[in-house]
Length: 313
Image 1 (cartoon, rainbow, N blue to C red):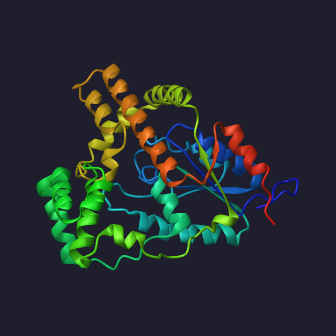
Image 2 (cartoon, rainbow, N blue to C red; image 1 turned 30 degrees about the vertical axis):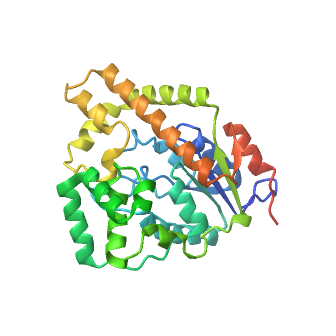
Image 3 (tube, one colour; image 1 turned 120 degrees about the vertical axis):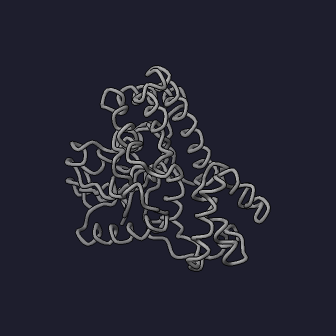
């Protein structure tokens, strides 16, 4: 974890931020200077088959510095924050064994929260309960699940998006199996953090809104040039169940419609840009509400400079 001039940065660097904010560029620059390993902290970039649409690092960028937990999950597989945290524990141990700097980068606030605070120790859910709610999810869809949750656990129903099938199902499983709201379990004391806050530099990279919107539009155009329409068509062609999280990746539905001739390209692009802006707004709301004590940076240069200024003994 030592820079070439002998400067040693924090024991870990965490870079969160809305989509298109420049997080990956900042992480790559820091990895090159500090012998770092970039660890994916984004719930969509874990999936295989969506390199372009989820803005995963390019093969050239991955070759410039070690990258872990990118594009390694079959999108047909159920994958949770607990699965990611278990993998991170192994990856983090490996990085520290070889004396490199772990650089966690992504836009999923829940992953960062699990990394720094641990997860609630919810008991194992019986297989029959899990099977019941998964089957019901296929029958009644997200709207039906949200209505059921509102009746049984209004606190969690208020917290979750009515379209988030995976988390709605999880909340219903927990209250069914334990008789307690998932909110109660989450409020209980939990496991120790993998990264101690006092030994980690935590940054939210948050450009000014007009600049972020410009970057989103520019990046979406670049995605189209790189083959995003073809990627979306191939991904939809795999026949995944529509409730799988990867199917909600921005651009999958709109650009698959373009590829099938149901939508004009200009319409697909406009829809993708609007969806991306909406997603960035939701991310920023999470960061402001749940990560208010993190250091803010407006530019990639400012984020990198913050690491340079913070040696840790």
